[in-house]
Structure formats: C-alpha cells, structure tokens
Image (cartoon, rainbow, N blue to C red; front, side):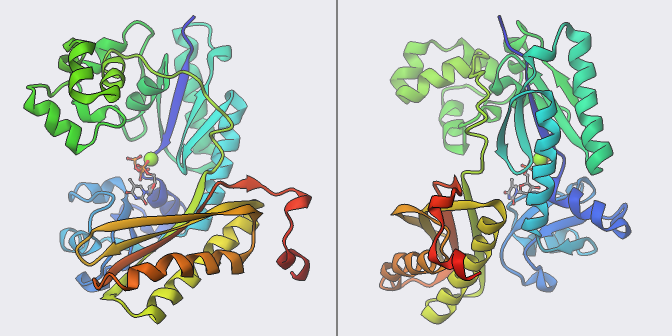
Length: 359
Ligand code: TTP
Ligand code: MG
C-alpha cells in the first residue's frame, strides 16, 4: 500500500519570523543576512521575503549585491536562537499529525498515512496543518503531498508561497515529467550540465534513459537518477534522523586576514555561541569541525572526534585552535571561518562535564 507523506516547508522562514516580530516591516522588502554596510559589506543573504525576491534577491547572494538591487529594504542580522525556538514549536505542531522527520530548521516530513481515508481528507489535513502553523505561530508554509519523500519535497516547492500541492499515488511520473532535472535532490549544477550534454533537460526525458546507460555514465548515482526520475523514492519517515545533527556558525571577516589573533577570536566567539545553543538544547557533541574559506573562495573542512560526548566549551575551543593551525602556513589570506559541532546526543547524567558543576 502506498504511504501518504507530507513535506512542510515554511515560506521565507527567517524573514517571516522577523516580519512577525516587527509589525513595522509590513509590506517592505526584508533581507536577513550579513550587514550590508551601505554596499561594501561582505557575507551573504540568508533569505529574503517575497517582496524582496521581486528585485531578484535570493539566499546565498552577496549582501553587497542585495544592497545594490534593493537599497531601501529592511536589512536584519539573523537571530539564530529565535529561529531555533520557533522551529521547535512548529515541529511540535507537526507531531500532532504523525511521525515527523525534521530535515532542516524550517522543513519536515510527516507520515500521515494513518490519518488519510480519501483525497478529500488529504487536502483537509494539509489545510489544517497550514492553519495550525498560521494561527499558532503566525507563519505561512507550503505543503507537498506524495507517496514518498522525493515527491512530497518537490511538491511543497511547486506552489510556493502558501501553497498545497497533492500528487496522487500513480501520478508521480506525470507530475515530475515537465520539471527541470535540477529539481531532483542531489542533482547540482555539475550533473545538470552533464545531462544537458546528453540532451536531457527535463525529468521526463531522464526517465526515458535506460538504467544501463545511466549506470555507465554516472556509476551508482545513475541508479538513483533512474529511480528518482521515475518517481520512486524513500517513504520511511525516520523520527530519529530528524533530530538536529549539527550546530554551526560562520564569520566572514571585514578584510581577508591571516592574523591568528583575529581568526582565533572569531573561533572563540563562535564556540561560545555554539556552546550556548548546546546548553539550551541539552546536547553534547563528539565531533568538532572547522571550515576555512580562503580569499580565492577555495574552501576546506577539518574535523576531530573526541573520545566521549562533551558539552565543554574549553574542549571545543582547544580542538578548534588545533584544527586551524595548519592553515596559517598556507600563505593565502582567509575570508571566512566556520565552526561546527556534530555527532550530537541528548545529555544524560553520565555525560556531565566538570564545567557543569561550576555553573
Ligand atoms: P529555505 O526553506 O530554503 O528558504 P526560505 O524558507 O527562506 O524560503 P522558501 O522556503 O519560501 O523558498 O531555507 C530556510 C531558511 O534557511 C531560510 O529562511 C534561511 C536559511 N538559509 C540560509 O541561511 N542560507 C541559504 O543559503 C538557504 C537556502 C537558507
Ligand atoms: Mg522554507
């Protein structure tokens, strides 16, 4: 029996939360991201509300370009803690309707198979979920429904913002067919180019290519492409995977630098920030990582896993400092550094660290 999976994705999430908190932003373009500094700011746009998107703005665009396109927008710095709190509340709402697998801060799958009797009840249920989120959190969302996660996810993007798209079981191929191959998860610009070279632009065209051929060209990934293009995908909603897998922060320097003092103070402040989130969420980490982006945008990541889960700030700092050392001898100046903890687990009494006793 096919399952019924919903994918819920909040509309312009960070920007919508900011609008909700600041009624004075009503009707204005709102851009959440780095400080534009009158157009010379570095760093990027996290997201923009739909009013700002009319000017061509989007996530990951340099903030300086965003400032040029829309100088009169409201520019705000992200408030990650607030978004995490709102996100947790939304996930609690979704859990009323079935098992939830959280995918990112603003999106989740729900297995609603048990709640569905007919197509009428599918659309009623999707509406109810959207209304709950709207009434309780004053936020707008889009929902996609399908027999597996691949279809549900693509469907939630189909009528954004504030849309519901239901793909009936049996109609998967028909739904995907006209869409560009880029809509498939894991198909990035490189695969897109490759497929274009083979004369394949739409998912429908891709579905016609034999598995054999795709295996020859892409190896194992070819088998995935064949299944995905034919509307087949994973329908297991795993609540375990839904727990937060990592916490990270990034800092873009005002000027590219190789000054250890500047770099290490950035690492320290990110560590403090991450540590605070860990305390709030009652989480411990086992892996600490850094991400270094050089002036020319070449980017490296390094990570170290410690013996036992810890919540300790000093340990995190020490690992970050150790990981950054080799990058000083590269000679290139650094544009951006990131810090990240992963392999997170819920705290138990046993995992308490020395610093817990001195709080
Ligand atoms: P998305 O769901 O991709 O984007 P969105 O919610 O802003 O807009 P919509 O879903 O309506 O298209 O990402 C969720 C949040 O994650 C987003 O509000 C900000 C953050 N984000 C970044 O910080 N950087 C990015 O590059 C992206 C894509 C998202
Ligand atoms: Mg979203």
